[in-house]
Every structure is written in structure tokens, then in C-alpha cells.
Image (tube, rainbow, N blue to C red):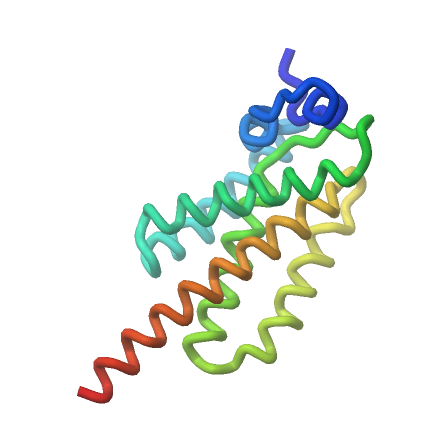
Length: 157
């Protein structure tokens, strides 16, 4: 039986692999379909922007961070899905684009809208969404600075 991330098992018995494996377990077919649709939409764009390796790293770091945040929900919570990773990819793309274009002030409002829209549904793991978005935003900021430095170096030579 797949249960996703059962916080009690992670916290009390050290079943830390559930932080990773729960990314691949979904509550139902609609949950899976929505996550896969949005992963396809943002994943293709991120892969084009930064390459497959950075896209995967961003997805998994965001998903794992979201699942770590989910542990704060208490021991009797079961969490499933790839939402933390998917939202992390969206956050990374938003912050990366805003950092490169030097419009980072509007990134905060975009991230807030992303968080609120995806956390209003019943059963949504708000802490996992928040953790994924924060991790993705940090990665996007780092990648954006890196891209901006490359552009600046090329434009000055």
C-alpha cells in the first residue's frame, strides 16, 4: 500500500525516503493529471531556459523542500503529490526572469498569486506548496544572477 509521506513514520521511525517517494504518489487520477499537465507546461519551458539538468534539480529540490515543510503540519498528516516541485519550477521561472530583467519587485506579487491560487483547494498541503515555492524562488534567483552576469560580461566586451 502506497501512503505517500506519512509524517509520523518519517518523524518517529526515520522513514526519510518518503520525503522523496511521495512526490510520485497522488491522491487520485485528477490530482496526477493536473500535476503532470502543469509539469509538462513549465518543465518544457524551464528545460529550454536552463537545460534538463537544472530543471530536474530545481524540481526535486523544490519537491523535497516542500515535503520537509510539510513535516511541520504534525505527525498525523499524510502528504502526496508533486505540487511542491511543480510550484518550485514556476517560482524559479518567475524569479529568474524578473532577476534577469531587473524587475524583481514584481516577482513577490507573482509568487503570492501563485501560492494563493494553488493553496485554496480542499486538501491542498499549504506548507508543501510554500516550501516548494521558496526553494524554487531561491534557485531561480541564483540562476537569474548567473545568467545576468553572463549577459553583462558579453555586453561589456
